[in-house]
Amino acid sequence: MQIIPVVLSGGAGTRLWPVSREAHPKPFMLMPDGESLLRKTYARAALACNGAAPLTITNREYFFSSRDALLEAGNSDQGFFLLEAQGRNTAGAITMAALQLQQSHGDEAIMLVLPADHLIQKQTAFQEAVQAATELAQKGLLVTFGVVPTHPETGFGYIQKGAALAPGYAVARFVEKPPIDTAREYLASGDYLWNSGMFCFGVGAFLAQMAQHAPTVLDACRHCMVDLKPRELGGAHGLEIPDATYRLVPSISIDHALMEKSADVAVVPADIGWSDIGSWTAVRDLSEPDDRHNRSTSETLFIDSDNTYVHGDSRLIATVGTRNLVIVDTPDALLISDADRVQDVREVVSLLKGRQHPAYQLHQTVARPWGTYTVLGEGDRYKLKRIEVRPGASLSLQMHHHRNEHWIVVSGVAEVTNGDRILKLNANESTYIPAEHRHRLTNIGPDLLVMIEVQSGSYLGEDDIVRFEDKYGRTPAI
Image 1 (cartoon, one colour):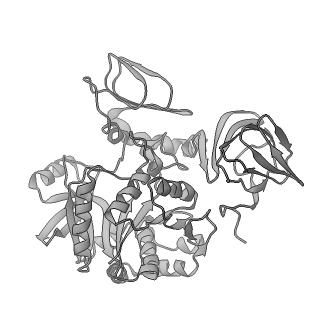
Image 2 (cartoon, rainbow, N blue to C red; image 1 turned 135 degrees about the vertical axis):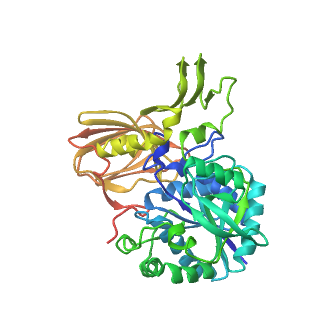
Image 3 (cartoon, rainbow, N blue to C red; image 1 turned 180 degrees about the horizontal axis):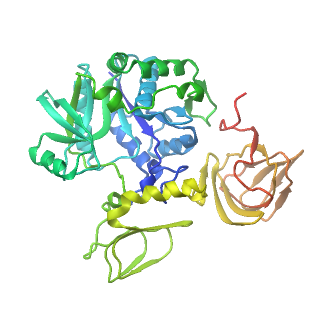
């Protein structure tokens, strides 16, 4: 019997802006220990599944960051990736994973479904819960993990325990997010658990249940499987889900599509130190408070302040006379919120998106398959970037219609294609690239290549890129 971790990596995490953004969502956020939630998920899955390579379902734009997190977690096998152009909720994603595992591992394989943006602090207890869930899944049951509640919570769904099984319980019912008085009753009764969104199924049993209770989802996903496209993804294994077909998959959660309908559902109670990190107060509570309940992740001076949380980046922050605040500082955006209103941070994102302000989508430093770029400054008709390229990595062969570029090497050795010329540039050397010229940058040295790029022109948007060749599969499909 094989237990295969299935990692669902996506979601905007709008309540955690300005750290979580559309191009850098919650799974890639660093926790106070310096590790991302996704990296922690991969490491946790490896321990629970005896090192089995995971199957990750993620947006195409998140593939390379996901691959890097997997490697950082110590997984020598880069795993397998199913790539979405856009999400279709959990029923579609999990069904696509099950169909892929059916092909690669057969109906008897067990799939352990883990969201990439949860934090679990009790690893041993988690592994014990996985073992219990696996026993039930081998009996043909669809298993969910119910977190033992610690307080009345209105932000989570609940699961009511039914008849005792060995181990776990049958599920009596699923309950939507309750009002506070009802949540208190649930906590006092001891019969209810938080719905964690983690699952354990036998592949064959899951697909049979989908055929019975959600055939439209299953049939649409089967159509997608016919047209999966392998992509050259820098050494990792991946299949791209066709967007036009995937759009026909009903957008519905696995709970609504299947778990609430099936009579073969079990729940394993799990006291695992679980948090979905759904708000800044949840992040705040990961840090130790001082004697006035102030917390900080960076160098901070608290003067006559109470219950103030500061999430800083690099600069010194001082608070004077503050009460019950959450302060999140990034290089290009600052959030100041009443601690009791942090759920409303998503409204900031909605407003920015409506105005097409780049801060809803991108950070000042943006990850790319080859490294990173950081916007140092910009204005009318110019933009200044710092570009870092990993050894052996290469930007695509590309062209811009509206901008000229001047590249200056700070450190490292670059090979530059500039029109018909191929140049080798060392530190303190440069080249000028006019608009409409094909060009490419490659790090041919053993060290990180650092460059300054000066852009000038009538339009400097990131969408003014025409790619002709790309080792990371980002050229348009023909």
